[in-house]
Image (tube, rainbow over all chains, first blue to last red):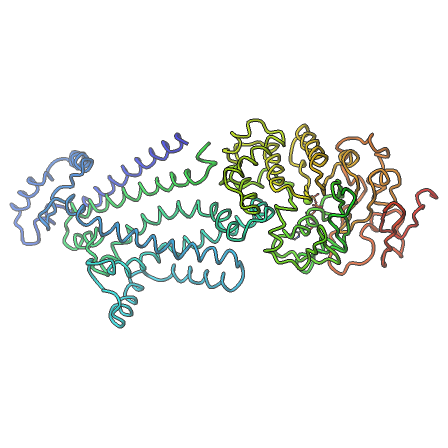
Length: 305
Length: 326
Ligand SMILES: Nc1ncnc2c1ncn2[C@@H]1O[C@H](COP(=O)(O)OP(=O)(O)OP(=O)(O)O)[C@@H](O)[C@H]1O
Ligand SMILES: [Mg+2]
């Protein structure tokens, strides 16, 4: 168990290192940074000045290690546009993104698990077909489109929910629903498949032979086993959602990290873009590791092995 | 009260879909406090019959019966909810697959305790005490430690002992044991069977034991039913069956084992040429006729059920003394 986690940790570190390299290369490959920073009207002298000031005249490898060294201690430099520390910018916006991600995940779990169970219990019947159709629909529907539909219906026409901003919990409802839809298809299918497998297993036959109630058979014995992969994948899905928040936050003008990234891309604010990519990637890697840990915690066969 | 009928099954039928008739009018009865063995080749419908009695058939299995009574209660019209109150309480079952029959996510103690908690509303602590006592009863050392373990930490033999102990939690009147030793290695098989025989004696438990092993039958059974292609083709008191096997299939099974008590251990069934036919609904006549040396055109029609003195029953066109005359 410990060795397994250690191995996973090493893999996570390697992934993080790769992401670090990619994030660095991303900005260097998109042209001469000094020219982009200086802007279209700058003279050659201005560009040279900027090159020196930002240390862009040093060999790339030196720049890389310098950047990595700073990134390690959370120093992502200064934003060109906001004239503020990049780390502070991200720190300020992170709570919004995390709140949004967790809202999305909670909604997704509250929808997927009951739907998956209902589909599994009625395998092949109309309930099952409806659930499978919803899952398919969720997969086919683009998030921004669903976002716009919700905004028009509940925001503009019915006036139930605010359509943009971060003032209250109501602001998170619609973006949360939209974000949840990215995870609902996968989580529903996984719950359904897990429950079908569990319900036809020998230990469920034993549970029935013991005369247990239907609720206990379904929720205690079958779901407990079916939930193991669902919970693990939910952690990974949260990572996807945080990444996907770039689109949703711009649609709903939620001032989170995703919105920050969107603004910065438009303004060629490379330190910020770089840092957001890196932070989201590291969170994603951490969540993937969390998924493995959850798996091990929930499955006694892994825990005590 | 030994001798009084506890479980009575007549004309039990189980079909899966439109093409599989797994059980076709099987009849058997189990007396209180006795061991009834059900034998027959693989695929003849033993497990399906047992599951049908407990109303535990897999999805798609349809059950019918002319009579299905347990302790005077008619099980046929029972709702699943009512049936669940009997299962685990007054009638219990253990399975052919000890490795997979326990839930991997819960400890032995929690799985055992919940039976008593469900049927008797016992407190968790008392239920665990009872579980520990029964683990000791089925020969498990250090029961307290085992209660906290998960199934994957136990060997197959231990898991089957846990299953047996779990089945005994509510002191059932009937235990259905479906080939409880088939998946275990030989030394463990003997221990488990000795254990069952001991429990049967000490607790006055009635056992319906499904087995392949004629040696086991000879040692533990009060009564034997021989199953073939979904029917019980012969049923008799153990000594009587070994002494006067009448159905050609039974005779085929016993060919090499004529003396009860001196039966060769682990004698496999089905040393008769041919295989059990897959039977569909609508099949008539004797299921064994394709493999039977005595078959003629009569065997394709309705087969009479003979009942002789001492409750020796068989399902064949041949007269009772055909074997002696031959
Ligand atoms: N769920 C099911 N769906 C369709 N057919 C089934 C199902 N379960 C059992 N059968 C069929 O019913 C017949 C009897 O099976 P059963 O498991 O009762 O045999 P058995 O006598 O217990 O054999 P074994 O000694 O191998 O355990 C077999 O032909 C089997 O294919
Ligand atoms: Mg079987």
